[in-house]
Length: 211
Image (tube, rainbow, N blue to C red; front, top):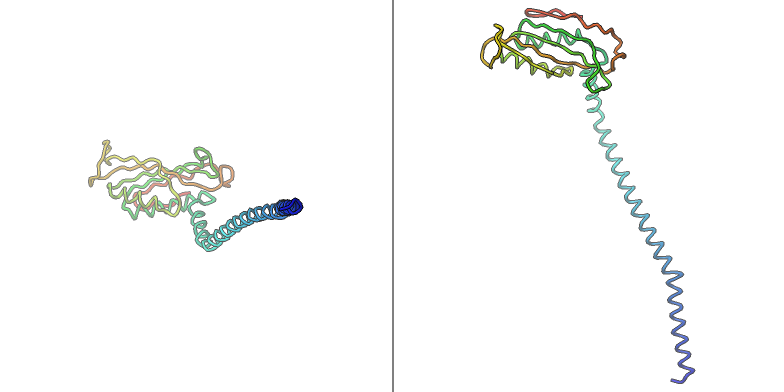
């Protein structure tokens, strides 16, 4: 190969290399960068779409459950009324005492107090005492916890009706005292009533309502 042909070949090779480099620098490189950027945007949009679809599915579930939630809210309003409603509670307690067969029911409501540890509600202590067998006491206790209104039992004490301490689950009569609490949604100062507790209610069988 003569020098002239060799120079032409070298020039052609250099030209091809320059074209390849220029293609990569000015075309392929930016195209690849743009493709990578579009891929990232696509992934981001896909993730956003997945979040939106999840939110829509959640909202649809909430919409479907709305009637059940409404019922639960209504039940909560009954369990946590916005006023003490002690007369209604006394009637309910008298009803479960008759249903369980206990006698000499005494109910002593206290005054509304702030909750231990704080909270947007008030608590009203209730002391109940009665006579009955062990099975009747258990029946009364179960019915008490199943009242429409929320009742929290804090202490249960009992002894034989004769006055001696200690009692088992035999058939003898027991003197029972239950300390419990009921709750009102507004905190102290917003219940709209006075601080004086209602008068105690005592009965030998069917009790009369109290204030």
